[in-house]
Length: 362
Length: 103
Image (cartoon, rainbow over all chains, first blue to last red):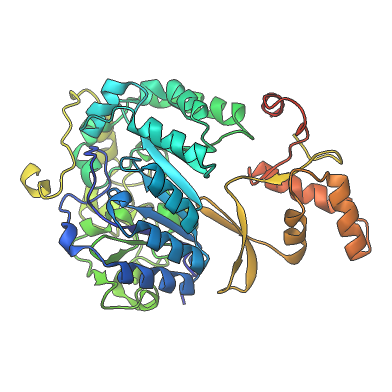
């Protein structure tokens, strides 16, 4: 029997007012008509809790476009889940924020693109104005637990110091600084998002100093850019080990990038119980344990630590999901990463995330 | 900063104590994490309200368990403070900027 999962990420919708080029959503996104219903999501939350899940992320797209968000939050709270809303804050009015609080939301995470207003607008692909700052002030005024999250890339990494100060001034309890992970739209835009080595080294120093400086006031989580690491990331604690993602159209996945692995058979939460999907489905069992591993992973002492890295990244870059994540310095295809790291001079002419254009843009 | 008898610990604003009906255990929940608690751990955390000192918490629990638990309480709170899950708040009554300058 597999472990009990701890975390469910519910991507409630692909609809989003923003068009960020680093979005991890797939290039081909289903439209609103295909979204799971309120009852579907409630059932999924209950089944997840029955399996042992304790953490629920409500994400998207922009989850606030779902009119039933408050109802879903209330249900999650009743089930005993710790619920985080991952939002752009666009559409977060005072009445909505109050209803979310009353429904029992545990934590609200607001994304910011940059401290430079014009650059933030350019990254988001729309005019953001002061909406995010107003959303943050609203969350603070209701005394809700509040994180700022910023996806880092070549176009904003030089502002990291200001970004950290901004989060502290907004009164964030927590700041999540995540270097871009190259799935979906981010992979398509990789040559425009990839930071330079100098940026990475400088930003690591800034982040480490800030972690110490703000300890006890604002918790800072800094996610390293895996392309610059010696070893790969243990993708979501290993395939089918702790994490379940459910897409807006009901597919249960072990990882964000799994839709890219073309030979996997996706299972719909409307036709199968999440417990069956977790324990029995071919997709969740595809890369469990280490029997699927090839060398150099199979005999590697680190295999229980990083599980050979991310299966989706291995597939996206090598065409074989059982190969070592090329991020690993021991991978025979590490040259793919070295080549990507030399792509840091392209002009920042982003391909914006758009529902229904993924194929055309490709 | 380590816990002392005069620290006035409180749970991190983002953490809350829950009960996991699946595993039948109390659990500390916080963003992207969960820590299962034993009964003693839960009893300590429930007394961490930012008002009581570590000495008072230890006295209350010492009476309940009939033993001196001070060093266990300090060790437990240090472990949680290290992980940002408990704020020790030794300077709770001082100016708000003071605690961070000691962090």
